[in-house]
Image (cartoon, rainbow, N blue to C red; front, top):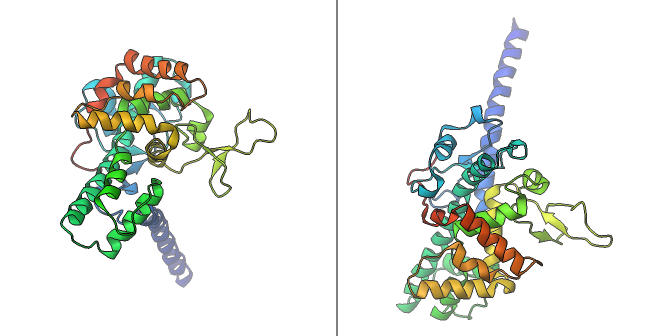
Length: 313
């Protein structure tokens, strides 16, 4: 009887541990993603969902996306998949493949832009504080220093309005249509090995041995670069946007975007795509492909899409 009781208690303890381990991992991801990750306008990895194995297993919210016209989405469900559906490479119908790919990508791209907007809001708050001759707190200075380092902006010894403006110039959103078109080209609408196995949506290279990476099959002898690997699709999209917002090769994109803002014009993928001549060795041909994908698939309407107000529980 005692042995049975001990076995039963051990079983309960084991079951409790199994229940706690995923929560513990998720909380750890939350704690390291940003310093204030539990604030509602920051990434919530607990809301991430694994992609369905088949159409019959689609979540209700993802089905809602698939059943609607993608070009009229105003309240996109906050469903952030951890990886792309593995059925994508096996879908014979091109339109269905594209639709599922866009359904997976749209909430994540909007979320990444939402985080950029949150950072812009924080910068504007600091700018007002500086204009009013108020000192920044230690936490505010630390955040500003980290942000400036991330976006490769040189700060004045005493933070100034000019420093904040330099950051605001770089930290801005990327149109949804442009992000989807680039991801479609780089991944073959989500079917490539790197997209499926490494969450590599934009083919970013890394030479840092500390980064997780996937070795390209056709890498030339003597080359050491790898395709950067990400744990979450959201991390891949955020890294891509950071790259566009800080790399010297995309200065023209930032200049064009700032000009559109100055004239209160809508930021669209079609307007910014011509500034990406240096994104690919193919140059003009690459830009033409981007514009063709945006126009043929009518992606421009997605530039007006917005996430639903309520979060996924």
